Amino acid sequence: MSVRVVIGAQWGDEGKGKIVDLLSDKANYVVRYQGGANAGHTLKFDDKKVVLHLIPSGIFNGDAHCVIGNGVVIDPVALVEEIKGVQEMGFELKDRFFISQTAHVILPYHKLLDQLKEKRRGGDAIGTTGRGIGPAYVSKVSRVGIRMVDLLDKDVLRSKIEQNLKDINFALENLYKEPVLDADELMSELSESIELLEPYICNTTELLHKAIRNEESVLLEGAQGTLLDVDHGTYPYVTSSSPTSGGACTGSGIPPTALDKVMGITKAYCTRVGNGPFPTELLGETGELLREKGAEFGATTGRPRRCGWLDLVALKYVCQINGINELTLTKMDVMDGFEEIKVCTAYKLDGEETDVFPLCLDEIRDVEPVYTSLPGWKNSIEGITSWDELPSTAQSYIRFVEEYLGVKFTIISTGPKRSETIIV
Ligand code: GDP
Ligand code: IMO
Ligand code: MG
Image 1: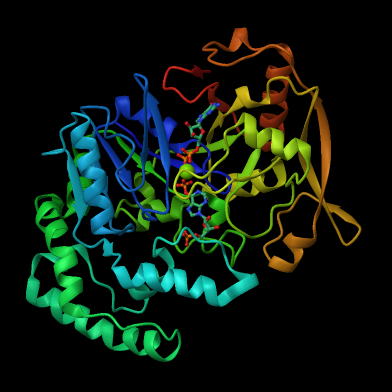
Image 2 (image 1 turned 60 degrees about the vertical axis):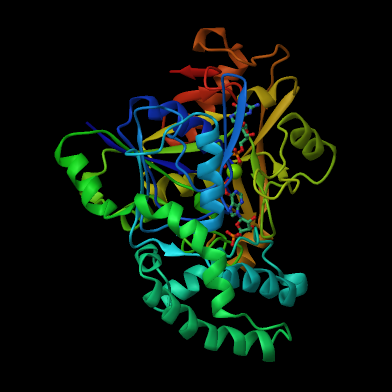
């Protein structure tokens, strides 16, 4: 029995989908605990490619039960579409898919406000995914949110929507100069999704506690990456939830004392989608090359991802914040063919070198990365499944990173497919 958390250790898109899919083979429960359909987790198996936004990445391992925890914000229409896609692939959800009663609902006005707010920010836009995430968490924290359980009582739902629309329509009319929304239309837009989701809505906190009491294995799947965490990330250029290990507890109802292992996932380089500081970003040819070789385009929005060298200052901070005790390295194959590979081992700030990740925007924006150069390798390592087959320079690269961080890699990924993996 074990309770493990899988954490994105960068700005997202580290390959969480691939690794959770792989690990869920031995899990009884796979749980999403934060974020919403802003996530895009890619899985490749049996010549299939699937992108999941809300459903946990264990859904294609027949025995794993999949749970959407209380910390997630759910767009019912997007979720139903995803459920139908999974069912069409021949995978059964009955009795193995559960949605928390207390997860909050993303309504069409959250998506609309997300897009309107971004437009109003102009040059200061965050570059959100436009999926309504920020406004939905605002509703939650301001205590006017609608929860999944509210969908089950039409009168309650209608009255909550009407209450919310008073403020929202005021803002639409007076601030954004947009047409107002109608409660009847919102109710009818939701009705089909509610009917389909109803059988899955339950008390997932008790479900997970029962699993832990029965010594079953639970895998918690973070969406987003730690540097997008609303508290510990590069605020305000972050998402509105906590992908960190602390968030895994609040977003699932599993206590910190029940966690056995915190696993971090990092790529062999760095990417970021949307705006905000990125100290090791490569704006020239090398960045282009990484984007092309790594196929770095957003799994949710299709936007080109910004690319750069691996940032060990940031990664060390991420290990501390989460208490990471095991690491996975993904996209190692993308580094094939580089004569030299750089890793950032310190920042220069106000003329001084530091290995402490700055927490304030004006500092993190101003740091200059200090690089250590490591030798690359010529041969392709794509699809390699054993440590011994790795060129010695690739092994040295991994050892260098481990030594800097004081944390070991237990999984090395050498391609997007389940099978293209080294278990160290
Ligand atoms: P997630 O959001 O963390 O699940 O990551 P994404 O799915 O958004 O992005 C990761 C991308 O890299 C996907 O297209 C994966 O199929 C792909 N991928 C994952 N691991 C590897 C790997 O080791 N090598 C290569 N070349 N691609 C990988
Ligand atoms: P996965 O799960 C990469 C980024 C957006 C934007 C910021 C806020 O695939 O790793 P939001 O829509 O959340 O309000 O946008 O966060 N972002 C992601 N970047 N991968 C993701 O998810 C992301 N989810 C949100 O680009 O900069
Ligand atoms: Mg992604």
